[in-house]
Every structure is written in C-alpha cells, then in structure tokens.
Length: 188
Image 1 (cartoon, helix red, strand yellow):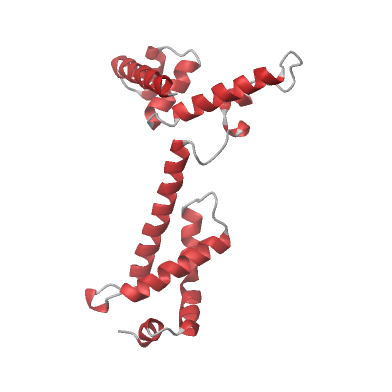
Image 2: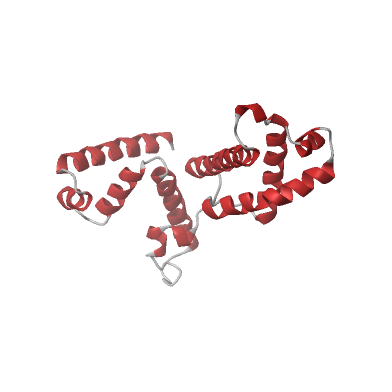
C-alpha cells in the first residue's frame, strides 16, 4: 500500500488535498462527458473530493487495480447516479416549472402578441401545457417521437416509413399512447 494512502487514512488533510489536486483532471474530464444541470465547477470538485476520500478509505491494493482506475470508476458511478436522479426528478415533473423555450407547442404559439388573450386564457393554456409536459414524461423515447409526429398530422404509414418499421408497430404504439393518456387524465 502506498504511504500517501495510509497518511490520508490517518487523517492527514494536507496530503489528501495535495493528492486530490493530482486527480482533479479526472473530475474535470468527466465533467465534459456528463452534463448535470445544477452542478457548477465547485460542486463537481466538492463531490469529486468526497468520492476521492471514500475511494482512499476503501481502496485495496491487493485487488490488482491501480488507485487511479479505482477512483475513476467510483467517480463515474457517482456522477452517473447523480445524473439518473436528476432525470428521475424531471420525469416526475417536480424539478422544473414549465420552460417556454423547451416546449415546442408553446414556442410555436405567439399568444403574447395576441391582444385577444386574457389572463385566464393564458393560465388555462399554461395549465394544459404543463399537463401535456408531464404526460410526455411518461412516454418512452420512441413513443414520444411517434406522438410528436402524429400530433403534426403524419399518418401511421408515414411515421412507420420515417422509422423504417412496419405500420402495425406504429398503430400499436399509438394505441399504447392513448391508454397512457387516458390513465394520465384519470390520475389528474
């Protein structure tokens, strides 16, 4: 076992920080590959330091894995877990309010420019749009794509051609979407 690992285990914070600085490029490299919406550089470094410290505590040299690889694996697992949590929160709809720039249906309607709209129309529109956003979070990626195309008046045959699959699969997907929509509306 390397002496610096033993010093960190014995509580030497100076050695901890010195060696963490040597491994910071691993954290920064991973930051380029995994996008976490609410993590700034300081958050990445703080989380990286915690994973580094835990990796030092649990590292076993006899397993014939270098510490660098062991730390990198732990770090990737940690940040992938953070990313999954963020995605799960988004799917539940608890994380974010409605973002107009991300919502195609709202972005394509210039209701701010229309003088005939009153505040209750706007509130109803936002409420419906929010329900639609929550519903789309319940769809698989494929169902979501099919739903968008069907909403743009593409026929099942045209959608099937764009996905290079048979029409029966698209009709089945549309049926599944309808069932999910009914269930979603019953829950609301």
